[in-house]
Length: 328
Image (cartoon, rainbow, N blue to C red):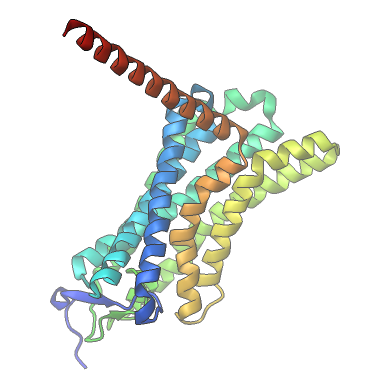
């Protein structure tokens, strides 16, 4: 069959999640609640870090960017999924699909890069505490975040430019709930050997580099901590790194389940994709706030401020009302 040019493909069909028609309403409410929790929870983290001067440190600077990336990652896929579930329309235009895939790659890559940067920050804090402030200067922190953005954007742009050169056949059904790169490649009539080569070289190199940085940092942290065993040092290391380790395990565990240990897309792979696109961004604020004393203290201070200003506003209203009553 003669392949159609990519410009003739006007839309794709997203199969969505493997949900029975009678359960659409329940899952719509569930994912809407998860999405709102993701947005509000991560916005709260960003707000607390901006308002509390005690949180103006490299660790929380990186955490605020991770929170923004998590909001963006969910916003790229979840609203479209919810709209399709509500309207029962599965179509997505060619241009919208390409943009969705590109921005998903940007923010997924940014998440991975920032997790590696945060692991390096924890390594410096624990293994070189006396030199921490001189090493992790504001200029270096800004450079690490900017580098993460540049790397993830270049990664996404490369795959996007390679994809738009392909032609697509009559079958335009994507067996996923968003425009995922490998799912799109399966629909192409063109030779995708170059695309797959780039995925297994450039893509895997980026993920392995980030994972290697994380593992190397924590191996070094473990070595330093266990060299002179002490309960105090072990507790400090766990309290400092526990939240980050949990997020890394959750994120890389689901990524490995989707891309390394599956031969074809099925319901298990889609569920794993939901974990790292919906569940992980939602859980991050809870993981970092419930296990972090500084975040808890900042939240308490913010709540106390709100109560104070609310009390002041009520007192002002009472004073104005009494003045008006007295004058009348």
